Image 1 (cartoon, helix red, strand yellow):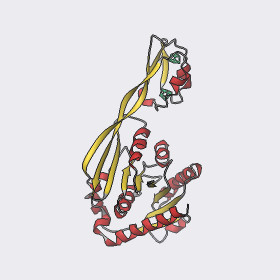
Image 2: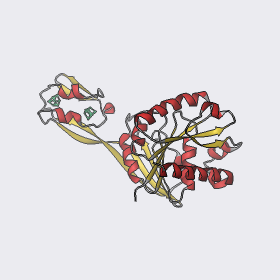
Image 3: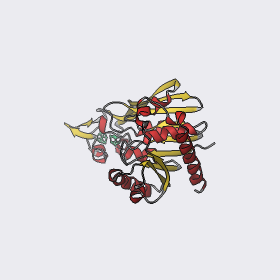
Image 4: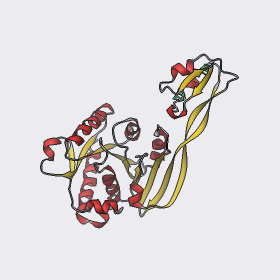
Length: 274
Ligand code: SF4
Ligand code: SF4
């Protein structure tokens, strides 16, 4: 059966994206939670999965055969990421800039380029009650983690809640490109609104259906956000302490459980309209 994939994203860090992703996955039976916030994955801190298995994710980077290379520069001029330079008639690779597109090999007329694996990160897969918990992690010093995100999403099953990287950049695009729906978490501040506008533009460019969840909602929030709001979560005293202790709030607070269950029903309705 095809998975139903919901991406939870925010233009700005700190709006409560992971809080929403974790608690939404927690109220959905047999859900899969995938942490694609690969520079700072912390959803597993809440779920505390067991039977965790780790796998290494590799990128393919070019290797140059100096006996075959004639120094024509075609590969250097082709690379859109400035990962190659020709120095003393030899191609030099700056591997941290390489995005593994493999295009350089396609333009080489001398069959001088092959590819080797370079580890860029890991994926942990474990279980917490009826949930599958998947966490992608980028290695230090690596610039592009798209291959980790792509590989992490292969674990999608049933309802899958995907915790996106913050912002609206390349890794967010990789995360949301094949999802069924995007849930944008905002807070009622002008900073959050400013970043929301960037994410909204991304939704338009990528033709994604989306809805807004206002976290820490107050009576003034609809002055700032007045379209596509599908849920509001009120500010709750004491929640920060629960979060800093790694507590899943929907496990201990019935009101929040009801709020997230309503969100689940609202998302199911949105998706059935597609
Ligand atoms: S694989 Fe792509 S990004 Fe990497 S060096 Fe070749 S052309 Fe550049
Ligand atoms: S395209 Fe091939 S032959 Fe030309 S510089 Fe690159 S590796 Fe060498």
